[in-house]
Amino acid sequence: MRSLWDDGYDDYYGSRYAPTYTPAKSTGGWKSKYGGSGWSKGWGSFSFSWGGDKDNNDDLFVKDPVTYLTPTTSEIRKKVHAPKQTSVDTIKELARVCYFKMIDERDFVAEQFVDSENEEHQARKALYDSIFEQFIPGFTPLEQAISIFLKMKTGKEYAEKGEEDDDDDIDMKKGLDFDRQLYSDPNINDQLDLNELSKNRKMEIMNHLSLVGQFGSEFKVEKEISEKIVANSDEYSTMIMRDYSQIHMMNLMQKVYPNFRSKFLTKDLTVSVPVDRKEQIQKIIIILDYSGSMDYDQKQIWVNAILIDRFKYVMKGEAEVFFSYFVDSVDDLQFQHIKNKEDVIAFWQTFSNSPNGGMTEVGDMVEHISSEIQAGRLCNLDVNLSEERPEILVINDGQDDINTDEFPYKVNAVSLMSFSNQLKDLCLNTGGKQIEVTEEDQVFTYSTEAGKQELKY
Image 1: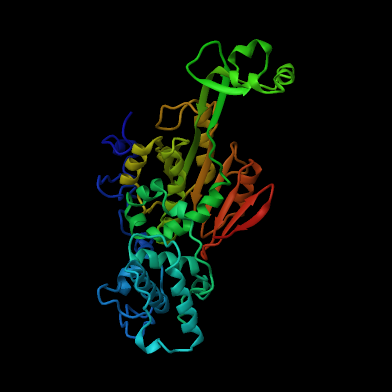
Image 2: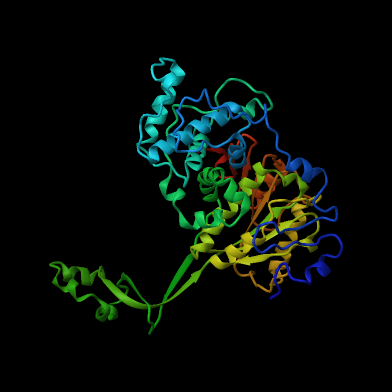
């Protein structure tokens, strides 16, 4: 089977699209005829810095550890969305505290604040003291500081977008109840290191993953296992006796039961029978919006979190993913079949977090995928999914044209920062579900069973 980025790809797409492949970095992807420049690319990668990068650390509540180099403002803003200087200073303080925790030094308050009775200073002291007693995710003091900051954010900076004020962005009274199992998952951590954006914004993605795991459960990944009793097999299964002829398959220890006779008469005994076991791994079709309006780090961080969550099941052997970007032409659909850990690694090596396509047509994509499945293929892949009918997951920013009145197939969707009621209604009409992620990082689920519900971190 021809590789996704092989030499014949240009001929397939003509002059409109030409992929770029870079083995060592995840900078591959579709490049429009306008190249990497243009309004969407320029504005999408532009980084605002409110009030400039200020690195005067004299007024920090936590003293300078001396043996630890406090992260700079620019270093912090490469790792997390923190437009306010108050947020940056809080992260600096948290990084210092996490370093003090690492060396088991609890005397961390700067000399000028030791005797302060200021309410805010007391709240900071209580919060920072609690860090020493809890699991904090992250491999460096800065990563740990960012994870704490994200956990305690109030979201106020989104509500007052573009305005600098003196209010802090974290709630000092929030609990630091990190999910150790999630943050320690090797399948997740391995994937984070395979992509440049994921590596740089690791703690933001980890923070999102707790929510993605919740709404990911709306699109359940379940491996179906069926067993059929056969005459001979190397595999055996323990089950309740169905017929007296199975008595020879019974564990002999059951004969010593005082009520063995009554259990035998009622067939209430267990037997070990030969079975033919078949596993059917769930198939997931994911199509990702490649329009220029998706070219914002805030959206792409969510994209990576969603993909990492789905690939987690691939790496466990519980699911297979068929992935393609999409724009406005069904001829541009090119699927990658991701079925094991090696495929996940290969995927991240060519994945692009820099979309710059034009218009998108969700309805055309869904209808074409449905017709391809019915025909026993999937666009460029020679794979027959007609008997399994996998669910489709659309990831977009809600700004797409739907171009249909109904979907012929069960569809789920995740819309980032913008929302389409038409897409929601179409998903619900097929028995699917719609997820809305707002600019404030709120997450809402829509289903016919439960209506609209908000998911909380």
